Image (cartoon, rainbow, N blue to C red; front, side, top):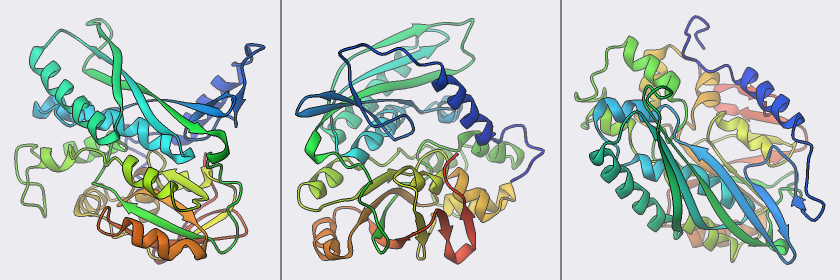
Length: 338
């Protein structure tokens, strides 16, 4: 990726920051137990026969494009999606959500649009928004920050841990709706340098650039929970920041992507305008694969029959003994997660 761009995230540095932060978190209640360790997609609290999942995430700098376009309707959907798509990777059903909005000054139209989006995201995820917090901080905010926290629940015996993933298992990818809510620091850099007008037609599309770039993040809750009730899913990954590197968060195996989902036009254009390589693209963006599921070959027929006509998906690869991720058609390899 272009090293001279100040707007491309240093993900290695970001990973080191998180590692140093986690090292300081040493205190725990004596009567408090967690399941798993830091580094997964969600945090699990042990409550006897059940576990509670906690997720916290935000929309990031996608909100800057929303501000520039005056379109906030989809941002609430994005916020919920970023949380619940992580929660379901362990089999947890999201049931409650709280939001946090920080902005320079009160704006009733922004409140209306954000609220509408949050409501749609809640319906799509079948959860209740139980509260939230808004903060007017003109000295702190140049734009607007939208984030939230989801709470989910799962029976401990049904937690998807990834431990049983083995050589020969199949990888299925669920198609994304587009950029989702990751890589927007790079996106904004690209559209600025290429003088893309948000109100003009996006290259290769019949829609305005604002509509293409602000397409809401796909929520996979209902399809995944339905599949979990029938199929012995071994592992799942939400393909967000870090792209396909997220596969390594399931288990340290070799994930071979032989037939990836064809990236949508928005990714093709970002790659061309940003002069990015396939390795850059698969590390920054989801490239059309919004969510990944690992199953054994014996479950393939049931899995395909269950999800047919409900979500666009395909078999994209398989698991081998080893480590890392390899996207065969583009000879792209990653050693693992950060």
